[in-house]
Length: 163
Image 1 (spheres, helix red, strand yellow):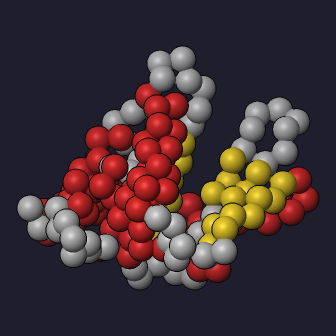
Image 2 (cartoon, rainbow, N blue to C red; image 1 turned 30 degrees about the vertical axis):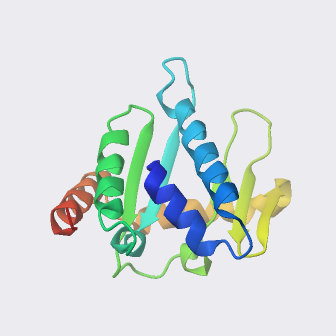
């Protein structure tokens, strides 16, 4: 759901050894991946729970980056298969305080897959190792703002960011 500018900035700030060309290529991959969200025949459902702190990022090189990113979130949530919730700064304790992760759940007998990213790379977990994450996601969702309140929070933040 990232704009190209946000993706480049986000990748650049955590990349310790990547060249500017590699950062640009990774940002392009993120942009291309988003196409699956808007395919008319897509059965994909995407549910993002974003910590509010991530929505307060400021990029010195291009101050309008965050405002554009917030607007992008409001646009993409219009898709029928996309849901966004915001974890407020004052949320009650929940399993997500241990760190972010991505959970991919498949229909049928296919195992869930969990993606953990950090400065040294990515780790994928599946099967039994993914079970705690699948269980934790429900508690995380319950601690987040409702969908309606989340969208109102994003809209409020758009008004407070630089133009």
